[in-house]
Length: 486
Ligand SMILES: Nc1nc2c(ncn2[C@@H]2O[C@H](COP(=O)(O)O)[C@@H](O)[C@H]2O)c(=O)[nH]1
Ligand SMILES: [Mg+2]
Image 1 (cartoon, rainbow, N blue to C red):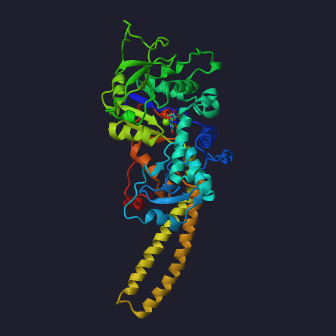
Image 2: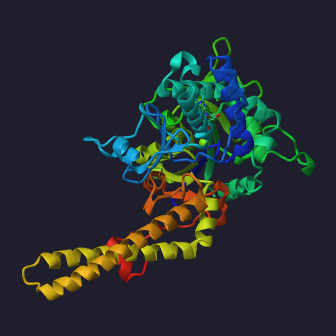
Image 3: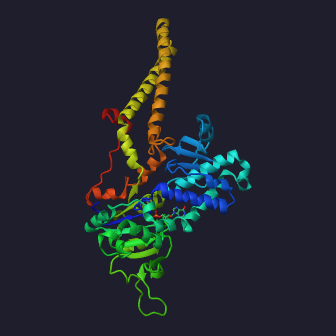
């Protein structure tokens, strides 16, 4: 952290942790209403309910086939559901395993569930797939699965834009966002250490102000000043409506406007420098209600931000976000910012890893037993083929092979069963977020590749000195595992 001169934050699902049971339910209900009242879906959808814990991040929707997939880091499909029905191994292999060309599993045929905002739409898609299969005539114009996905996507998108979600959150932020009293101390610590702090969010100013006020504003009971903009003193620059990930393209020509906080009006700037308005001799400074410090903008690109913060090298910036594609991938890969990904699911995952330590050891044991039996079997089979083996030895080998065969089946079944049980402790349907079988999941692979750091909550940053050296974990090759007993 020593070389970091500016620490930036995403807002939604990074600083502001939404409560999925209320927030995602709101998104779900709003989407269903739009499907019924605007897009011609039957009213019985209004009776449906939402299980917010069913879908998880890292899943991939196969829009054409109506399937929901979990993949390993090599993009092999390991768990697959058609709607809510688990696909058989044969079905899975026939659909995804027997192709001449490896599928990329990317847009436009697939949709990635890579943000917590997408859990409701994934669930609704699975419900619609089931519904269509059982009632083919009841979906509008006999829409296919892709069309249904498109409708769900459009309805969710509208909920984010037309106030369905934001007005409700604005009325009662506490109902939808977790309180976090550690945010202000973390921001203070970073600023006292000499770092600049900034916010870059895709939310617009009015909503940003509501959410940040809830998270960092004075609590009405603490007797301090009650300005609606107190939270701005914890930041040097706030950029709203940033349109990430496009924001991270230096060549993106989006204009940067300064925001007048009271009215929300946008004021032209010359790449961030205030400009005189036609007919006025003085430059209108938008922050007259704020003594000094933080400037609020809308739009622009990363070049504007670097200039405003006087950043000389992009490796001096650390950005904390929740969205691999929106916040992390481009900022790290193209710009070279340092990145930290917030993965709230980790908290439970780590707790369970501790609880299931013995079970996992048992799994490893079963796996090495399987390997051992397979090696023995292959060895015997080869020896049987050899012309040097006499009849008595062959007979012995055959009876040994019989024994191994039954042992192998027994251990294979125990291993599979134990593996399934272990995964189900994490999530009944999708298993451990970071694993598929015993391999890293595609999600885990992306976290490893694109995030310099990852943590369960943003305020974990303040558990360490702002000058801490975060050393990368040691790399291991398979031949080192046994020697180092890993
Ligand atoms: N128009 C849409 N907006 C969406 C959608 N999903 C999320 N969002 C909005 O984006 C920002 C995220 O802000 P950030 O702080 O994480 O950059 C927030 O305002 C969401 O409401 C969508 O599908 N369509
Ligand atoms: Mg976010």
